[in-house]
Length: 113
Image (cartoon, rainbow, N blue to C red; front, side, top):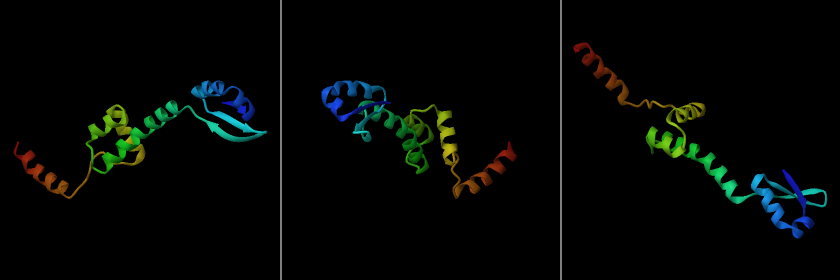
């Protein structure tokens, strides 16, 4: 992290802006931290990359997206997205009221084959 004071920032703001591309720049007022300068494009990119998996997981959990669509939205491979859901405690297989009926219908069909 690069640190500069207000006086140097006024003299050469472009140096602080260049430094902010690599890491946040700490602005000091006297000897005390006063502000942080962030490169907006890099910060938004990092934020977006972090939000996409969370958004995909939330939309999948709420039933708004299928597993594949949520994985594509997240930007992760399907297997990685499934692991992400598991780490969040989100079930991949949705158990609902029709599951018992469907498994009951499946038993006689399998017996007849």
